[in-house]
Image (cartoon, rainbow, N blue to C red; front, side, top):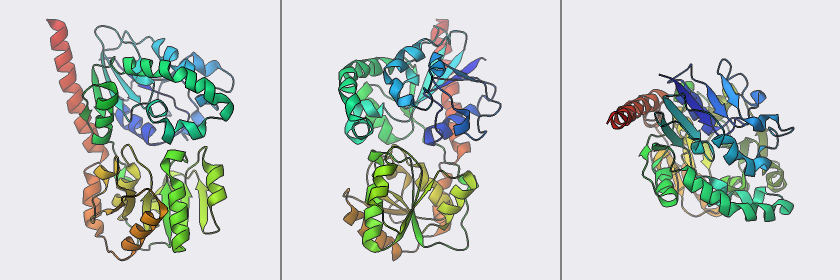
Length: 367
């Protein structure tokens, strides 16, 4: 069986790209089609994988300024020739679901979220778009929304990474989806003997992640905060941070594991589509303070693996951190919760879904 994967762009390594790598383990010989590819962003993680790019790869500076190519992505993905494959699996937060496949090709799309900058602009695009470019974005958004809804009808099967995203898919694309929770690399994490004196935020630095809440809450408590990650919001966040806040930037996998395992708690201040960091913290025996919305409601168990705060302000988060300080969490229960989202569980569920979908697709085509 000939299989191909499609991913939006491979220009940065984050949760969506970790999911792609787990999906690829199901068919390790399959090529990965993508709009743009920056090998330096992956530290060899894609070594040995046949990565095939669109014509956008030839645009000077395109990899670095991939967001500036926004109007070009729909046509780039529609130009991919995937007719000779039996199965195409797209992994997407935006454009990859819009590929065309042949009449005898099954297309399954794993959707991490509906296209955020189109449907949730107040929490994403507005603060990232330079003022001079905002009129252009406003003018093309209606067209992109129409394309996005049409593109979401093309896959034969939609798979959501959480119940939260399944609800968004139903509301925006008017389609049902099956839920297969994201895999968490829990086997790499373990409790450590000593816990440090810091709280930890680990995320891309984007406005909707609301890292500023963690900065302000820790300042109110006089607590140390380490922020891991990079992104367009970093300059603004640095203006808010005092001397007790450390920006660690990008870290390697070993540093990531140790920082999580030694944190007093992990803070998830934004509305996550799913929330992998909370599961990695649980696997390391550490609790999470999370905003009570989105995917965190599926990855954090109140009072067992962490605590929620319900109001999106620093005062509410600070109160939750105080409550966490007075509680003891059982690492065994934390790890048991994390194991429900292990990669082997993800691959088993995806394999069953793919096999069932292939059987139904071939049966329909045979009649």
